[in-house]
Image (cartoon, rainbow, N blue to C red; front, side, top):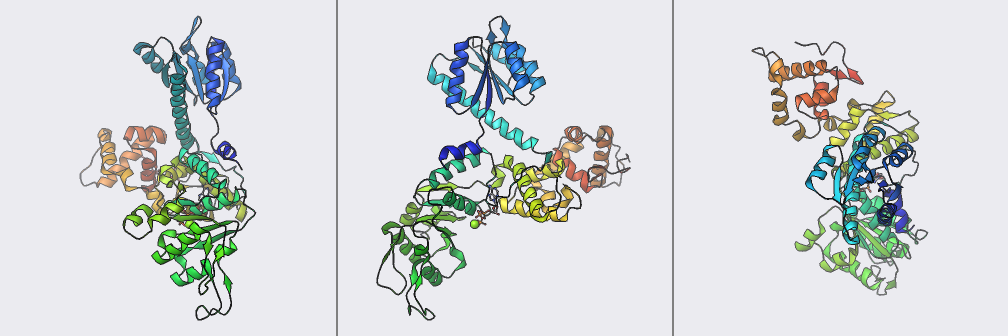
Length: 491
Ligand SMILES: Nc1ncnc2c1ncn2[C@@H]1O[C@H](COP(=O)(O)OP(=O)(O)OP(=O)(O)O)[C@@H](O)[C@H]1O
Ligand SMILES: [Mg+2]
């Protein structure tokens, strides 16, 4: 697989409608965007642009402010009606604060001036593209909320994620796959380091060669040495015959050394030699063996700090990190959570035959607001457990472990409760009532006053939807799938 392939899978291009009354200008902008990997369509007036919006779907409309006798802003209602999630950015040759303000006021997302030179235009467009991608990412995270589980994936090793953090990982992964350089993969526990190591091997031209994994922290120093480099008969008690080391077993292919941060300094010397010279010496032998092995290592440790502390050899560190891939923690790529949830749920359904068709919006809210200290592995386990627990085809918040339901303490801090209380003027306060009871009653009143529209209630109370849901659930005001009958009566 080439780097290009990997990119195409992950970073879907933006679909951009370029509207300019001057055909050559539209073409010029269009070509710049295409060169940047985006897909474009062109229109030259409001009618043409509206027709395009009727037919295709777009992430961005890039529209000239003055279209012959028409105003670019006249397109805004059509964009809003036909494609509410699509952004509109105006370009104008008559840059002024007023026009900018007007465009934004009427609902444009951004405004750029029409630069006279190519370089400047390219820069402007790149900024707009970056902002649109960011917008699409946030939107994706929100939209994924109410979902079905259509993703069908039997591939156990599939990598899910479209966030920009993951897209850079795919880029580095592709580069690594196509080379024989050593790779250092770092990241917190459960972020997918092993999955990436496997993918680097499988996507590359040496995929047919061996891929050997060693967990360095699972073995004692002596055992690890003889596992890696082999031993000769009689080298130590119990060495009844010659044994090939894993470097030899992996010859021509890849050796994946997991938890490399934990190996002893003396073993580091031997490893450095194996990597640097391409030769190893089995334990108890005087002869060296030549090997051609690409080494991938992973660790959740802070290796640079280990180097500073003298726990890890600097020369080895540099030998290993020729290509370095840093796996982002899940909390830094929240937009990937809905896809991952769907993926794990569908895999669980396929494996167990249990019919699972959706994840409730509330459950998804919780899942995207939790901090996932155990990263993807924790998410995977949580979905597995929830799916096993659930008695319906939909996963609800109460199917998940309480720590996820309770979320992060920060999101229901005294500040949010104070915010709720500041609106409490319509709730009658009776002496002797506990704060919790008051809160329960206030939330109940608010929910009822807006017909159980949780978004509106959350707005009124000045807390986010997840916090509201959590509290309402805690106070027994709502249950699976909706309000609990009779429980929200005031007083
Ligand atoms: N992007 C992803 N898409 C789908 N599944 C993933 C992804 N990343 C990780 N996983 C899954 O999450 C689990 C943990 O991944 P993996 O074992 O690779 O993490 P790790 O970083 O090696 O963790 P540790 O440091 O604890 O060894 C695995 O079951 C893996 O298949
Ligand atoms: Mg691992």
